[in-house]
Amino acid sequence: MQNAALEAVGLPDDWRYQLLPVPPHLFAETVRALPDAGFRGANVTIPHKRAALALASAPTPRAQAIGAANTLLFEGDGTITADNTDAPALIAALPASPEGKTALVLGAGGSARAAVWALTSAGAEVLIHNRTPERAQELADELGARVIARVADADLLVNCTSIGLDANDDPFKLLGLDADALDSYECVVDYVYGERETRLVQAARERGKPYVDGLELLIGQGALSFAQFTGHTAPVEAMRAALARG
Picture 1: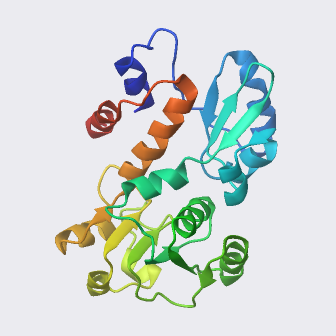
Picture 2: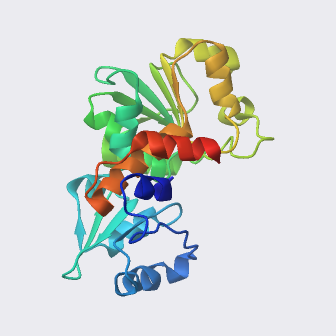
């Protein structure tokens, strides 16, 4: 997706986006070595998002408020800037403003932190349900949300767990949802993505419910990161086409 974007804006010879698997105990050492190796920046995935924020010398107010970063920029003076593009990507992907709405967020990890902050900042009332109530309460206390013991009705349903990543997962059983209950939500958001649409997204589509899948969120946050890395507006359609090609 990112390499297709680089090619679309005419930067293929000078720029390359590559995968760097890094174990947690080598994360800080690896990131500090990247600028001297010619890297302009990096996207950071689970489980490194909180470590990325802690490592940065210049976190954005957004990343600092969320408590996690997914985008690092390496400046010429040695500054490491950290941002979180997950949050604005979610708001941009929704079919309507969440202001005045109620949102049920499932999960309490890095994606959930970004989602809760984004939704509360946009004027939504956010409910959090997580299998570990203590983590949910910590997140709720930090970001002004409310913990609920079981799945409840809301305007928006946002799955920030990894349930659905395995094709054999039954998201309705594991998340405590009833498929028919999707009718009570105005929009369903599933952060999980893969080669096939998740069963949660499939159920929403079959019921004619507006939905946002994980690939659209991936494109959204990636486009924002791309602009920060390169200074070019991201060619979103080229990125979407690259994902469609696999």
